[in-house]
Length: 184
Image 1 (cartoon, rainbow, N blue to C red):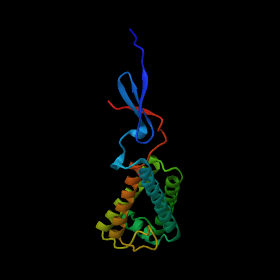
Image 2: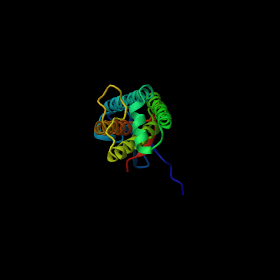
Image 3: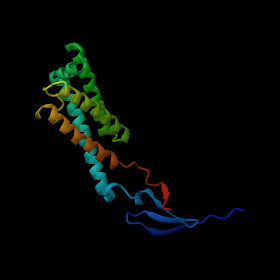
């Protein structure tokens, strides 16, 4: 009725993990699984960490820029939404707080949820920029103070930032290396 299950250590994998065989099925630790871009784990982790830190710093910088110099972002908000100057200023202040929070969340934890949340905010702001551009707005967004400010430049920067977000998310690895997965 019941057969005895056998667990046999077969060999040591290239990353130092043990490849096991259990009832004829080969099992490997999660560090042996194929990872994005085929990069070795240490390089992949470094790329992910650098992308996460850059992404977090960009969001903190954008939040600081909008909080300190809200004029461009407020004009953009007024152009798209039709609200008054004070309401636009408050919207920009709220947006800058979210950018700070997402940036610090990415820097401190680097989770996929933080990265995904910040990407949703970035894409929504990019749509706002695109709508404003279609309506004839020719100002800047005020996102990264010190860089040239135009709608087309901001959309290009946002595309690069989205690329960093994808790189950070794809190379993100959690600490569950002791879990096993069947290779069958």
